[in-house]
Amino acid sequence: MSTPRSEATQRIGGETGSAALPNRTTRIIGWGHEVPAAVVTNKDLESVVDTTDEWIVSRTGIRERRIAGTGETTASLGAIAAARALAVAGLDADAIDLIVVATLTPDHLMPSTAILVKEAIGSTRAAAFDLAAACSGFPYAYAVAHGFLTAGLGQRALVIGAETLSRSTDWSDRSTCVLFGDGAGAIVLEAIDLPADQVLAKRPGTLSFELSADPAGAYYLWIPGGRATGAAPDETIKMDGAKTYAYATRTMAAVALAAIERAGLTAAAVDLVIPHQANLRIIESVSKSIGYPMEKIFVNLDHYGNTSAASIPIAISEAVAAGRLKRGDVFCTVAFGGGYTSGAFVTRWDADPANGARAASVNAADITIRRPEGAVAAPVPAALRALVDGRRSARETA
Ligand SMILES: CC(C)(COP(=O)(O)OP(=O)(O)OC[C@H]1O[C@@H](n2cnc3c(N)ncnc32)[C@H](O)[C@@H]1OP(=O)(O)O)[C@@H](O)C(=O)NCCC(=O)NCCS
Image 1 (cartoon, rainbow, N blue to C red):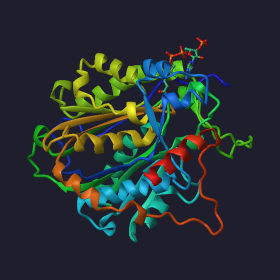
Image 2 (spheres, rainbow, N blue to C red; image 1 turned 90 degrees about the horizontal axis):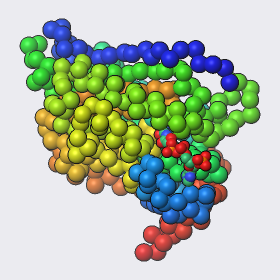
Image 3 (spheres, rainbow, N blue to C red; image 1 turned 90 degrees about the vertical axis):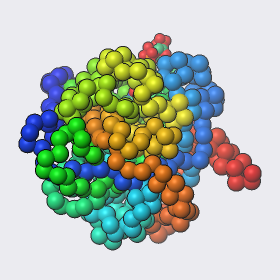
Image 4 (cartoon, protein in one colour; image 1 turned 180 degrees about the vertical axis):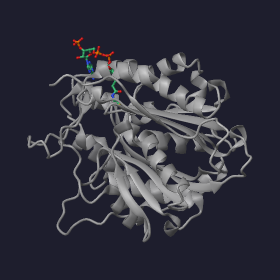
């Protein structure tokens, strides 16, 4: 492997605390998530690789993860999450101008997963594409949608993070397979026009971003699966755990603090931090670095493991349902991942959490992804088949 060319990161920001604030920003008006029904515990994985529940919990904080069943894919999970976000926003699919799906596990290389989601939710108008920024995909996609809306290219966007990492995991590699899980989360982002004289401290909606990309990490966390190098495609995750851990602890706190500063705030003024859910020890280290108490950091990785681009939107959806975000609260999300990439955004929550109950009106069985004639339903990885199919039939007969 060649030597990385540069450790330097390039950063792109959003609005600053200067006087020249744009009058248009965005706010979240819908949210939702979907996870597969099959729960695979650490104990279950003891029968798959040489590991123990004790090792996984003590090194990562993960206790269980969800694994996509036969026929469940990134698009199907993403479409259900998107339909729930639309229901919470009280909108028809044709109120949406743009659909962005952040994913590193798309259903196909072409068409995009976003196109399949668009059809499944009944949208006829929206532009749709996928975005690849690995586990930082959600802050990146949120920034792209915010830019699209504030530039006047549309009024509302669906920003989705969706993954089926179980299908890109080497189930004989204990150093990676215990970390990941499947799921999807979505938000509806809407453009809002603010009074010209409204100071940053009083603004609703999106306040700032910080995005970074560090090519030095390109081959420390990667999936060699593309075709352009001519190499035999290998679709599973490769990782240097120690280097990735070091990058995460070094970068997450810096990126979060930079976004908070751009919003004209201090960490103490932030009501909730929603970090990428990769490893509890990484989150605890961020808490220490920014002097921010764990009680004000949302954690659900014990149930889901690392769901990559899906982890932050799932966490937003669960945080609202748990009463952790109220209108007027400021929250900061921060992610890191393959690339290496990292990203953060700061938003003042401006929706009624009670609208979350509307998600129950969505019948997941009504949302289907169109497949080509004769296509075989996406299978569960062989190493997990007995675990996942067993869980499903037990549930179906219950
Ligand atoms: C992967 C990670 C949990 C490993 O934790 P760690 O405390 O650094 O553990 P080490 O790498 O020192 O491994 C210690 C030992 O455990 C072993 N081990 C690795 N995976 C294991 C598993 N699932 N079960 C049991 N033992 C395992 C290793 O082989 C090693 O054994 P050795 O000392 O005999 O060589 C940690 O490096 C990490 O979280 N990295 C970041 C990963 C990440 O977040 N990736 C996604 C980014 S979006």
